[in-house]
Image 1 (tube, one colour):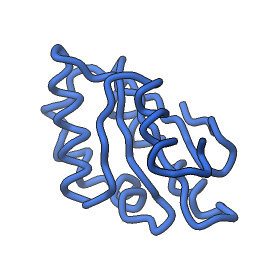
Image 2 (tube, helix red, strand yellow):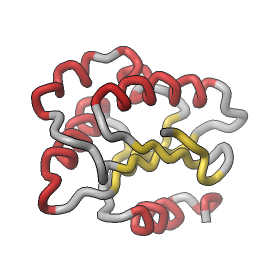
Image 3 (cartoon, one colour):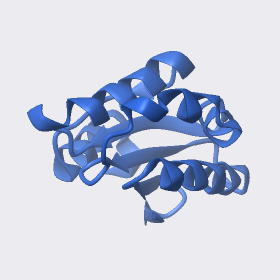
Length: 125
């Protein structure tokens, strides 16, 4: 699921499966294409994401994900909802951040993710 939490500035993406990630990244790139401003940030809810380690190659090779991560209007990528038991989800998000060299910060909760974003980007406050 994709939705603006701060119109034209911050998008929330909630993914439970690899298939959802693949379809949402394609749609998100389209949203960024239509932005009237120079960048938007992505908060990525990983709380319900199941095991994906076997599908990492599929994920990294997906054109939609590549297009999104290389998009000139993508600001910060801030995944949240990862804890000690979700090392898999945190690892996937970190790999994506490293491979595509996007601005990346992992937060434990939605509130922490939003607080960090407000700290680094004053218009989001």
